[in-house]
Every structure is written in structure tokens, then in C-alpha cells.
Image 1 (tube, helix red, strand yellow):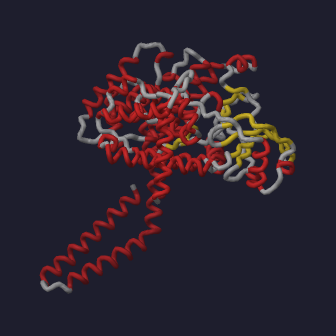
Image 2 (cartoon, one colour):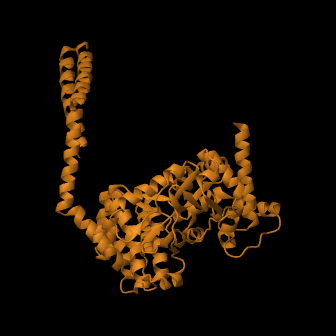
Length: 511
């Protein structure tokens, strides 16, 4: 235990010295820090030695030097502007997850270990890596059975052990900060590390990524103009993912797209509408939709790759998202305010009209501005900031959604500088709301209630038996009481209480 703690402290010291060497804390920000923190940072800079010279973001360069875990930490913190601030969040959003690849021979060794056969038997051709990130790298290959070109994603050897060591140090830092600085408890740092740990654990099991691809393919099988690469399950394990190779044009190459006859305006609309449909209709969206992960195939379809980071929204959150977007589109701020209170995000003691006034201060400044100057993602970011002033707790799933929306808007505007996010979003949001709250939606709700009642009917005998046993035991205890009057009264109260409890359970099962 002591040795493990020492290792965690050593990891944190190394990280602190690296950050000090890159001098990532601006003087103005450092001047507002407590004196002990300023002295400690100054000492760390002295110990770290000669400052590193970098072009661009010093913080991002420091995180890249610290390795895969810190790159993932930086990308995660980009979704937490409430913790690192808006400017830092924007800076971290530009963090590039690109590292040197491991060798071709080591990749073949990992394939043989993972799939139990030699690379020569599994693939008729196996090329050098075409991309390498913090967790895995990708090779282009060719199979003979079936005959197809594939992308083979391989985890970095030893990456799990490295991540676990760094995560342990993150937990130590989070616990320490929450204990020593009361204001840090509001940011729920330990919970943030928990979310990061769960995300990384899922990302390092490539079967989960393959499953995410299969789920999205099923959700979108009838969606025109969008598709997901097929999975080669026979060549996929927890450490290896083999999928269809996409022979398409990346969306970061507009000139090539135009030469291929791709309508950039339609493609920009398709990117955003696809994202909104997945988020609102399915509650399951690709949370890393930058240009490098999006392609246009030969038929002009939008194709997404790299499903390592996914977002999920519960039905309540999907309805919340659709309602607030539609409310802002229609400038119905009271509706947006009421939705927040109804969802329980803003406590009920706040005045719905006062909150609506705060929302108007966000929405009105964008009215009348040019379409290309209006960002729905940034508006959601401002909304999350304002809701914090009204005691709304941090909602990680909504922050991930907002961050992804900013990226998606950026991709759309890179293809169409005059892209109108609101005009593009309106039909998707309106159609879903009409379906959800209209006759069809009511029928679906009735169907859900009927299914709940059917489940209750199945469970009712067991519930009744359990309740009766508990009531008999309670009544028996009352009968052994010294006071005959009180025992009868207690027995009656127990029976009535049990009956009411049974009714409550039944209603809960239905609704």
C-alpha cells in the first residue's frame, strides 16, 4: 500500500515538473493563486530546468510528452469548461491524439497473440500503420476469405498497465484536492476521474467499439446518405478490431470532394442532421465527429469511423434537448425555462420567470445576426453556464453532447461557410417533437404503460406473497405486545400501510 502510494506521488511529481517546464500557467492566472501555490510552482520551474520551447499550445505539448493517459485526460477536460475554464477547454479541444507508431513486427506479434493464427494466414496483405494514436494504431490489410480490404486496429502493447498507473495518480490528486480545498468538492473531481476511467476502460476493449458500430449501423440502417463500416467479427477481439476499409475522401479535403462531384452544401447539412437524429431519436451518438473521422464514399454517402468515444442520452435527456433547441428556435424562453424545471435540472424553488429572463439574455443577442455567426453548440455552452448559477449540477452527458455539437458545426462550416445551423436543425427537432408529443407518441406511451402493466401482472403474485408475509410478521409482533388495545391498532396500521405500499409499488411499475 505504501509502495503504491509512493508510486502515485512520483507520477504526480513527474507530471508537475513537466507542466512547470512548459510553463503552462499564465502569469496573470498565477498571480491570483494563493502564495503557497505560487511558491510551489516557482520551485517546480527551478527544479524542472530550462523551459521547453514550443509552437502553439504549451499545455497540449506538455500533455503529449506525458503520454497517452494525459492526452486522454486533456481531451476529457475539454468537455469540462466548468473546471478548466472556457479558454482552456477550447485549447484542449485542439489536442491532437497522434503518437509514433509501434513496429510492424510487434503489430504482427499482437495479432498472432490475439487471434491465435499467424498474420499470413489471416491476411493476404498487411501494410504498415497509417495512423497511430494514444491507445491504438490502424493498418490497412486485405483478406482472402472473404475477399475485401479491411482496416485493422490494434491496441498498443502494455497500454492498459500504463493507463491504470496514471489513473491511480489522478484519483490521489482528486481526493486530495477535494479534501484540502472545499470549493473543489462542487466540481466532483473524483466523479470526473470515475467517468474518465470508465470511458478509457471501454475504449481499450475493442469489442465495445465494434459493438457500438453494430448498434449505430442497426439504428441508421434506413437513414439515407449515412452508413457505418461493416465489422469482421471473426478477426475482432478485445485488442484487435477488423472492419471494412472505407475507400472514401476525408471531409478535411474540400477540393477533392468538389472534384468528386460531392455537393458541399448538402454534405454540411447531412453531417449536422445525422448527428441530431442520432442524439435525439436514438439517444446514441458518435462523440468524436471531427474531419479525420468522417468520409464521403463513392456514392456520396457520409461514413463515420473510429467509434471509441460514444455518447448516450436517456429518454428524458433527449426530450429535454429537443425541447430547449425548439424553444430557442421559436424564441419561447418560458418554455425552455419550464423544461429545465420539469426535468429536475434546475431546482423547483427557482422562479420559472426569472430563469426565463436569464435565458432571454442568451437567446436575444443572436437574433438578427448572420447565420454563419450563430453557433448552437456555443449557445448550449452558455446555457450550461447560466444553469450553473441556478444550482444545476454538472451533467457530463450534456457537456459531451455540447462539445460534440461544436465540433460538428465546425466541420459543417468548413464545407459551407454560410451554413445555417438553426435552419438545418429545425426540421429534425420539430419532426421528433411532433412524433413524441403527437398521436403516435401518445400511442407509444400507452403501449409502454401496457407493457408495464403486463410485467406487474406477472410479478403481482410474488409481490402479494412478500407483502402478506411482512404484514403477518408485523401483526404477530403487535399481538405479543403488553397492551391489547395498542396491538390491535398497530396490526391495523400495519395492514393499511402494507396495502398502501402495495398500491404504490403497482403504480410505480406502471408509470
